[in-house]
Length: 215
Image (cartoon, rainbow, N blue to C red):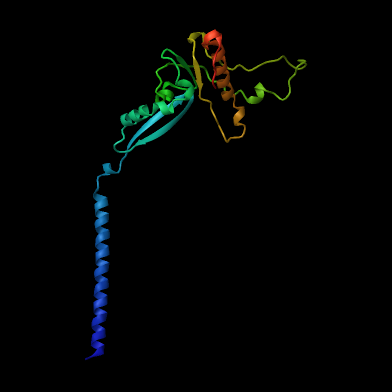
């Protein structure tokens, strides 16, 4: 027996097996690339619905992606099915003819609550961006009016008489956390003032003229 011949045959066999394995791997890779490349583009597209919420002049868009089998109508039904869980506790006991005032909000913001009460969107002109917090609360006040007369910047309010009496006032406060000075936002102050005036001027009292306020 020639050991050199046996060694040569073993070397050829290993080389052949290696080449076969490499060929199989290359074939699989080419097949995968071909399958992916031939798939229609529509299969990669998702049904995207763009919902835009606007509260007065503060507008921001929210994109909601509907996956297959969950159309917008399905989502609405699911939201309505869990409305009782999402409805704020102070709204659950409202009678059918109750009126809810919405400040810095739109009707769409409360749809998922599933409430049957009537809503009234309170419209008002947003305070000018030129008015700063220091204009309303200056560090020094000329009480003696030695230099000039007193003045106070105007903060627009809604026409309260145009609205009927309200049982509840719901407010969406602008919030710029964690920005420095977020709690000294003039627009935030305006929203507070609108809500407070609504509660006083258009709030519907309960028995004995009492009112229940929630902020």
